[in-house]
Image 1 (cartoon, rainbow, N blue to C red):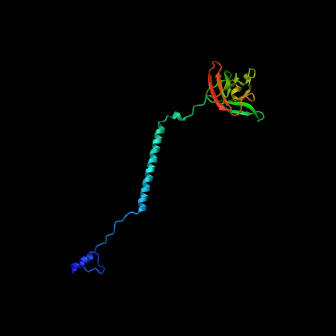
Image 2: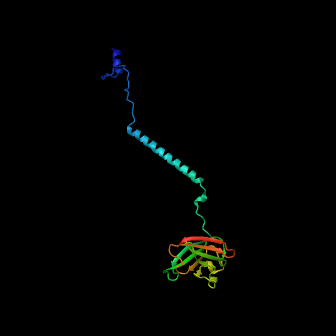
Image 3: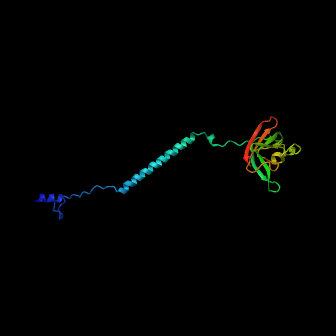
Length: 202
C-alpha cells in the first residue's frame, strides 16, 4: 500500500496531502522558444552589420586608390608671370559704359622687369588688334601707340615693373567687346621671346 502511494505521488497524479516520507519531484517546464519578433530583429542587426562592414571596406579601398594617384594631377596649371586681372568696359573718368577696353596687367611672378624692354601684343578672339611697343608709361607718349590711349599704374611709372604691381592698358574704345576672348602676350624686345601669355573672357 505504501509503495502504491509513493508511485501515485511520484507520478504527480495525486492532488491530496502528501503522505509522510513521500519524495518531492519538481514539475518539468516545456523548453522556451524565442519569439518570432526576436528572431527577425537579430536577422536585421546582422544585415545592418554586413552593410556597415561593406561601406567601411569600400572607403578604405577608395582611400588606397586616391593615395596612388600623383598629387600633381589634382593641381591646376600655374598662372603665367604676367596675368590679366580685369577687363573693364567703363570709362575711367565717368564710370559710364563706353566699351572703354581697359586691360589690367599684374606682375604675378618674382621677376623685376625693365618695362621699356617689354612689349604687349593684344588679341581679341585670336585676332591681333593692338601692339603696345613699350610698357613704360612715360616713354609710350612720344612713341607710335596706335590703338592705345595711355598706360597707368605702379608698374609703368618707373623704369621697373616690380612683382605685385599693376599696369592699366587703356585701348581705343570699342577695341574689346563684352564676352570676347582677350589674350595678352608679353615679349622681351631684346630677343623677341615671349615671356608670358594669358587669356580671359572680357
